[in-house]
Image 1 (tube, rainbow, N blue to C red):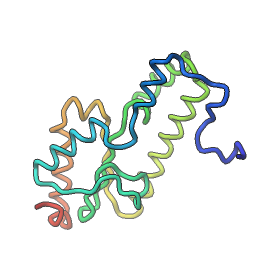
Image 2: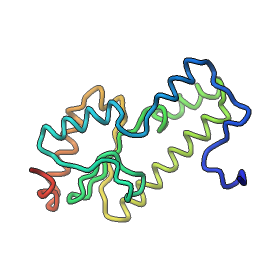
Image 3: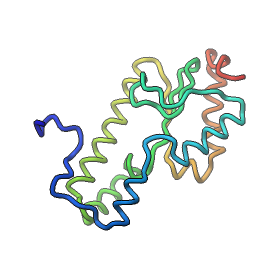
Image 4: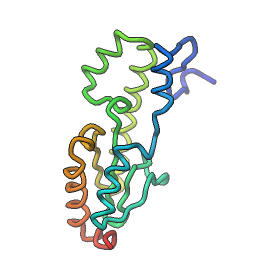
Length: 159
């Protein structure tokens, strides 16, 4: 494969910092994470009906209210680069910085690109950090419920 076409950095020549860190990264999920499930449960209990991980939409949003044209992402703090300045400084001094920094930068750029594409298609995009969901899932659910109920088209999403 041509290295200029590669979408993520190569692991070639790199190894995990420790067996524990290797196991931890292998256990990470792209969907159905604990913070995602927590938020979805609260939304369901409020009578809000949604679709999960809609592949036809840019970025495959975690929660989608089609009639309200609302796309919700539940971003992991590490993978999406929360507090990027501090995180990148920490990664620079750690193992495999040449992999992790470009990897997370690409994730952040992809998130911005997907936001733009969705907005261009008339979607409202909401992103929540995993820590914020865990800290106050009700606040995240309140925000989503308000947006869905405000949408004149969103009435069909509520049962």
